[in-house]
Length: 242
Image (cartoon, rainbow, N blue to C red; front, side, top):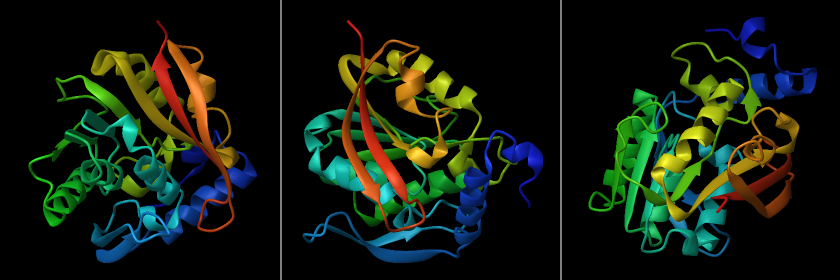
């Protein structure tokens, strides 16, 4: 399957080049890897990445996972919903480091299978589960913390192309997420989302979140110089205005 002009029409030349490079380098077979969460020995041994699922080990997800490890007060002893779980990395980190309950959700059958396999591999079945659904579909609980590592780039991925859908989304998706999230978030809860400078404003939670009901705090910024996504990576915490 080839990305066509209609898939990339919202992007500038630099963004298109980035998306095409990322898609090419995510064409992998099933594999396992000892994934370092921090430089100080916190490792997910034998972490599973299935074919057709976004490989978090070579992109900014490593920053997201480290952020959640170091900020476990956001979810320690609490209930979490992880939207767009992919391999399950964020949910696994939160389940291992203090969450009381983690519900992972992804629209991709492959991603849900991958999340479930990692839940089983890390023996987190009593804490974590994974469901298939579009955003919050099939979830009937409210959480203290919601995470969504949304696709950075604005576009229209081909149907069933799960790799492209991990990095491309119509801006309608993040708007729908931000509109619906308050129905699944406890009054004092927090939403955690990232941004990537190269991707621009259309899927940036800081830009879009201001149009809805949120107070937004940027709590982490780094200039990533390694991996596929080089540039400013930031993490943001969104809370419902009172």
